[in-house]
Amino acid sequence: MSDAGDDYDAQKAAELKKSRSFRKYQYRGVDLEPLLDLSTEQLMDLVHARARRKFNRGLKRKPMGLIKKLRKAKKEAAANEKPAAVKTHLRDMIVVPEMIGSIIGVYNGKVFNQVEIRPEMVGHYLGEFSISYKPVKHGRPGIGATNSSRFIPLK
Image 1 (tube, rainbow, N blue to C red):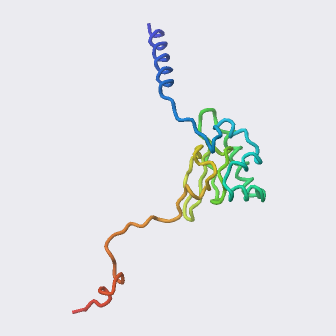
Image 2 (image 1 turned 90 degrees about the horizontal axis):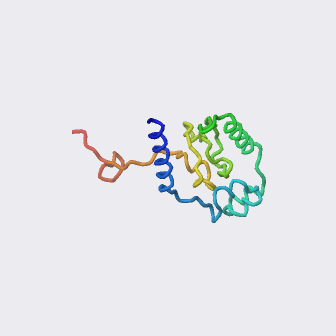
Image 3 (image 1 turned 180 degrees about the vertical axis):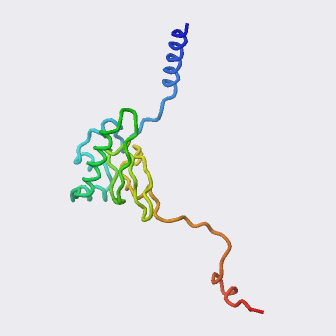
């Protein structure tokens, strides 16, 4: 009797999954699957001019080292598990499709902020996802804020 119930639940779950269709991600008109298969030259044609120039000048030793560490972390991760975080100071690294699904600790000058790379982040810099300053919280003006607060009598 429990087998029939399990079968029904599986069928119900499959229908729910089918009805819950997510928006297909596209980067500049290219779907996610073909995007992962692109070579560096083909990706260069898709990204913005600054990123194209950076790729054209070649990836140096540090960015290539980061990509190698990300590949290793992904390979060592168990199936359906998130890979181990890879720490980096490379805030100027452009997110490439190969990084999708990785977890990167991006240094903001004080701590490493954990960033999970999603498809929407392709073409952006890692530094954009790790804010390096504390946003201003405007409150009451302090001493020295205006001319009227310059002279404070002691008596």
